[in-house]
Length: 304
Image 1 (tube, rainbow, N blue to C red):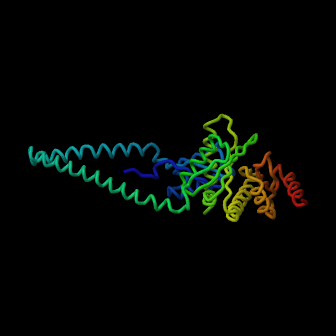
Image 2 (cartoon, rainbow, N blue to C red; image 1 turned 120 degrees about the horizontal axis):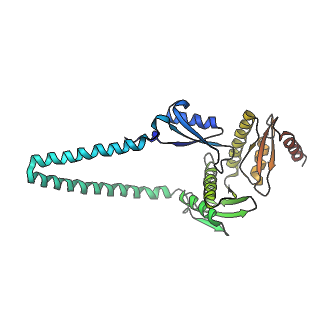
Image 3 (cartoon, helix red, strand yellow; image 1 turned 60 degrees about the vertical axis):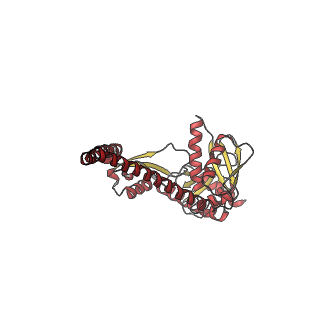
């Protein structure tokens, strides 16, 4: 029998320890019983960490178990048909064949019924947005823009507009409209996930891709709450490791919210790094090499 928890699975966290704890909770095992790989070359994660974990004793077993199930079923099926033939001779076989055909027709009917029920559910899932989830490109958006547009359309969040801005290091996509509002609902992690996928796609299309930024103009109040949580996690990680943490590229409004959220955080200073409209915020703990520079940047911002 197939066991989903025998397969490798990705887990995210603010640190490798947090991601590993998520893995042990999911599998219900100690870390010593898992094979854990930390992925360090994934685009778009920012300050987060991803690990791939699997129970050590299940590596390579899932497929063999599945093949074993199929082998077990085969002989039993042939044995059953043989028993029916012995009991009924030709007539028994004919009746068995007719019975089998009846079951096949019943199976096909069952599949049709299941398909009908699925079709009945589709309109209910589609009524949530006030209009179909259709994206409108504002100008040329390129291959990655078309990729992002397709992802959001398939999420069925409502109509939206997408535009593109490119500089030397970044390729930024701005999403606005009803669909963009829906993407910022809940924990507001959807834009972060879309950005991760877009960066992975860019890495496939080019050996030297631009960094992809997905900028969603959703509910500003919810966005500020999400950014405050991002800032708090980054500050915690910087304090624990003693090293500065660079967040994902952001627009000017989002960077300002991060700076404000950590302005009075003891032992933490922030500064913007990089060029262009989508610079990054560097969260600097006291004692890090960038500490004095970050303090000077904070004082300069306070004077303005």
